Amino acid sequence: MSFTFKYCSLIFLIINPLILTSGDDIFPKVEKQSTEIFLDRFTVYIADGNVPNLNVHCHSFDDDLGDKPLLPNQYFHFTFRQDFMYSTFFSCNFSSIAPDKQITKSVVFNVFDFDISIICRYPSKNCYWLAKDEGFYFSVDNKPFPNGWTMNHTWQW
Image (tube, rainbow, N blue to C red; front, side, top):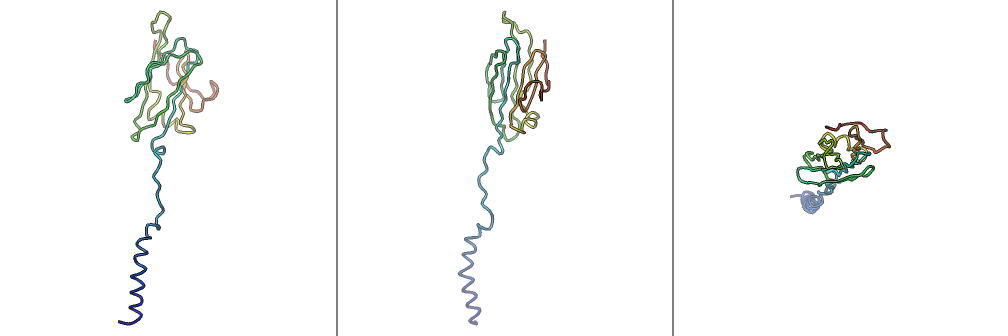
């Protein structure tokens, strides 16, 4: 063997393990992704826009939020993460209750589901619902009523 071949072989044997052990620096490190990217956090706000004795009962497949009696101009909210299959939903039963405890009007609808999540995603991942005597208004940016609010549901008598 020639001196050059031995010398090149020796250099290869010394450098090759260094290349192999430092090879993982070739690709950028991928940091563990935050679950917030995949499991978006949403907040739903429900306000009483002057409906007498409004009672709201919301639930999902996993969670029952219970009865929430609201006075005019009062609101409640809940925050949750959308599941990775985008199947999270919250349905609410709204009812206006007379002083004699009789339900005068009511309606049930989803305040959050896949379609609503697409609308609420931008700009803030907030969904706003406003109960009024004529029906239920929806907004994503909570501007003063009626700017930016659209009626989505009506009461059932």
